[in-house]
Amino acid sequence: MDTRYTRHARRNARGAIRPAAIAIVAVVAVLAAASWFLIIKPHQDMVEADAGAHPSTPVKAGEAPPPPVNVAAMSMNQLLAEARKAVNEQRLLAPAGNNAFEFYLKVLEKQPGNPVATDALRETFPVGASVAEQAINQRDFNEAQRQIDLLAKADPANYTLTILRSKLDAQRKLQDREQQLASDKEKQQQLAAQKAVTDKAEADRLAAEAQQKAVADQRAAQARAAQQQQAEAARTQQAPTSTAGAGNTATASAGGTHPAVLLRNVPPRYPTTAVRANQEGWVEVTFTVTPEGTVDDVKVVDAEPRHVFDRAATEAVSRWKFQPATQDGNPVPSQDKRRIVFKLN
Image (tube, one colour):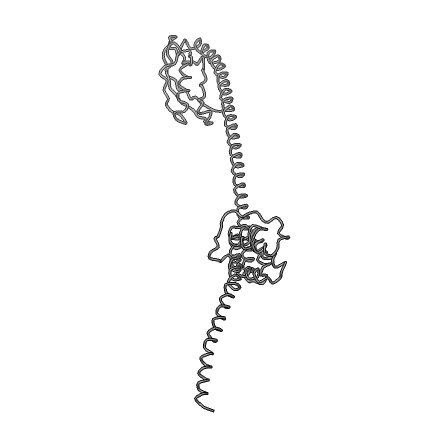
């Protein structure tokens, strides 16, 4: 065989293979692009939308819309649509009956192992755990417990649930302690207020009793002083009569010379301050008996206590009446000294 013919045939065969290879590569590239845009990318968009991570999906805030009327009768597509809507509106765990987790769990009830719901629950679980922790921090314990139970339905073996339950229990115990301390403090305040009222009432009672005793003591002292004055007046009225009789006898027998004789003894007035203070004492006075039988020039020479009964004693002595002293039958002035006793009966 001619070798030149063989080499020419080989060159023609290699030239025919190159366009075919290029065509095959082009077909593969077109199929791959079609698969990306028609299959893979729509599925990724759905998963991202379920997780609330699609960059073109707006996040809405505000009040949650009313829940669907009959969730049990909704199809899987409707449930997934509601779940995506709840994720976009940040309703992962709340409100009850209208949140993404409950819709995804309904999908899994209808179709266990549904990849869209399973992936969405797994990807949004950390965010849901943060929402439950926030409810614990706000001490909305009932809502936090509901959210933890909902997370447990999605991933019962997740260790984050143990942390959340421990924190919820600690916060509940802390609130109980705070409430107990507040209750104890309120009871202490009430007891202190009651004690203050009781102490004031007791102080008022003691003050009233002391005042009543002081008034009774004052009245008793005044009564004793009045009785003393009456007794002194009675004794004084008796003394001048006997003295006068003795004086007359002495005059008749002695030829008209005798000392002054007290005829009327005016009892002193017991000072009110001394009665209140329950004080007793005496005053010594000197005075002059005039020829007319009156008292003049009354002076205090001693007293106990000083300056308490002085005035009462001098005023009383100044009103005394005497039978004047006589010498050879003629009235003459004379000096006298007396002790006036002030005593409470």
